[in-house]
Each structure stands twice: as structure tokens, then as C-alpha cells.
Length: 277
Image (tube, rainbow, N blue to C red; front, side, top):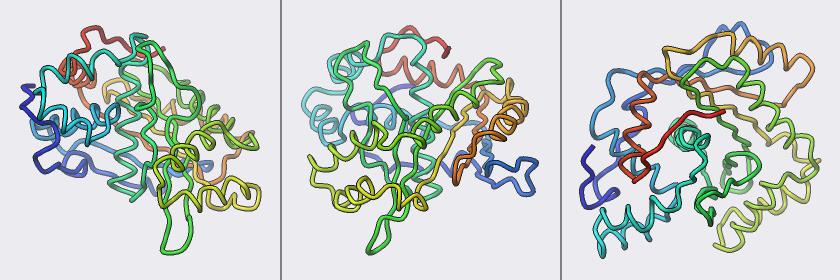
């Protein structure tokens, strides 16, 4: 894909232009809600540009990105600011795209706000940030209404136990008194004087009394050629003993996922791209 001089200047399409989102009802699974996403048709050039922008903006603040592109041009920005901070651990390549995609889906389809893009805080090229992939939040006019813990798994080969492993991370956050990502997000909200900070601080201090606002989301981003319902059946069996409150699974099936992610990462200067564990 040819990248022009700006990755953010043109109006952005919505993921709903590319993917459908349908609640599976009735569902054969009792321990989680399930949303299915499928492509409406072949992905077009403008959507690829949009996905590329999301990939870059997950690492760089949009104001910094726009100023840098205006001053340096896209090719130098890609060389000096984007590619050098991409992790070199090969098992993180496609997984990062999965985190970004589920975050954008929650924003577009469910009106969540992602207050802290986690990957902007990677310092070294090999650094892997621990903990839950994303925390998404909502509030109404007067109070915080949702704190959503999000874990993602992206697969381009058969892996029927990946959802169970994703659930284990979410369950770890559920059982901790104060998960690491809560502290991390709170610090970042304070630094940028985010209007969500007071409500989020109250939530952290009163978490045991505010469990009703917690949501847990597992995003499964799969190449449609290797998807198997066994992934969900194994998760259902695991949850017979571990019940997360308000647990929702989002299954995103994409054709030729290897080709798409290769193309996007190559455009930002990553030349070696392999699958997850």
C-alpha cells in the first residue's frame, strides 16, 4: 500500500464500513455473551489506510505524528519514529494488531473510550508491557458507568486453547485487589488531567463496592480459514469453574489475515513478521 504524506489528514472510515457486528442469539454458550464480526466484502484501500493509521497512532500521539509528518515527511517518520520502536520479538507482531483492532471495535460499535493507548509507553524495541491489553471506560453525565478489561488473541493457525489463555489473564485481574493496569491507567489519567480521573480514582479506591460497573471482554481475531467453534467450546468448559461477571467474547473473522498484517507492518518498516506463540 502506498502511504501518502499524511496518515491522518483525510476523513477516517468506520470499521462498520468493513465489518458487521451481530450478537449471537440464541447462543449455545451459557457463560459468556458472544458477538460475531464478519467482513462485508474485500477490504478496500481506504480501509487499509485507516488500519495503518490506527497501527501508527497506537504508538505515537496523533499531534506528534502530524507535526512530524509535516516537518519530515512520512518516509522519515517511518524510519526514525515508527519502525525503531516496533518490538523485535516475533511473537508480538500480529498480536499487537489484534489489540488495536478490538480497541477500535469497542470504540466504534459500543462507544467505549480508551484513555491510555498502552503501546505509546514502550521505551525499548524489545520491551513487552505486562498485564491486560486494554482498559476501556464509559461514563454518563455524572458518573463512571463501565470499566472494561480487554484481552485479545490473534491467530492465523489452528489454536483451540487460545481463548482459555486469554480468559486466564482476565481472571487474574478480576481476582487481584488492584490490578497493575488500574494503577497504570490512573497515573496516566492524572498526568494528562483527563476528566475521567476523579471517577476512576474513586473506582480504584472503592473497587469492592463497584464491581457492578466492571466488564470483561475477550477479542478473538482469527483468520477465517482456521477458525473453529472448538475455541469457544473449550472456553465454555473452562468457565464452568471460573465465572467472570459481564463476560463477553468478540469473534472477528478476517480473510487472508496473514497477507493483511504483513502488508500493514511492512508499510511501517517491519520486515520480519511471524505468528504468535
